[in-house]
Length: 253
Image 1 (cartoon, helix red, strand yellow):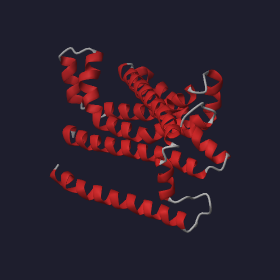
Image 2 (cartoon, one colour):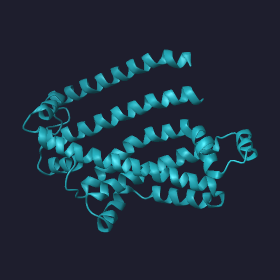
Image 3 (cartoon, helix red, strand yellow):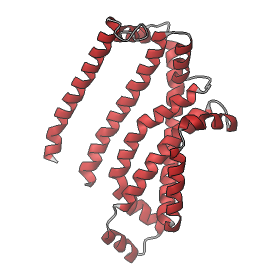
Image 4 (tube, one colour):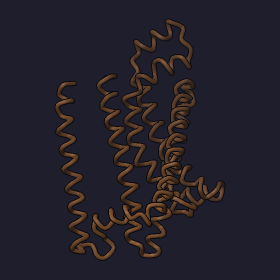
């Protein structure tokens, strides 16, 4: 535990250096047009975001996208946990559930987007694609964590007469927390990716729609502003979940 704490400042410093190098490279490429006219400087993108005239548009799109991500992420986590619990309580259905989940995950989200658009509204498609990507990771993380429970603990709960639901809540879920928190962390960028892809297929609002509009109308600052907002938010949430992951690992391992 002490070694892990000593490594934390080093990891943070290396991560900060990497981010600064990335931003510096971005600015350099944009300044000297090394990637052509479609690669703006970082300062021009930040100026576009900070422009009061552009702020309402970006704020509405950001609010719409992040609301859909929150709903889709929560829905995916809930579905993944429920299916994992079902596979644990009803062991006979686990092989079938594993194959079904793997089959659903094997289908590219971009191929399912038109299907969701015909079955539901345009604004529901980003939420569905977001939940679809998240539930797979949560299912895999939860089932892996459940499998790590020791035989001695399972025997103890059986001896005490604990029911299946009490066993899941008091034994399997705490044991699966390290694996589950890793799945929650990895699901964050997947959720944003599903959301953006869903918005590309005709959502009425959102950052993905701004990206499409920027590409079609050659509004390069608008395109890169939407990309930067999405990427920065995803990375921040990923880093925060990483902090939670380290805390859980130190507490439960």
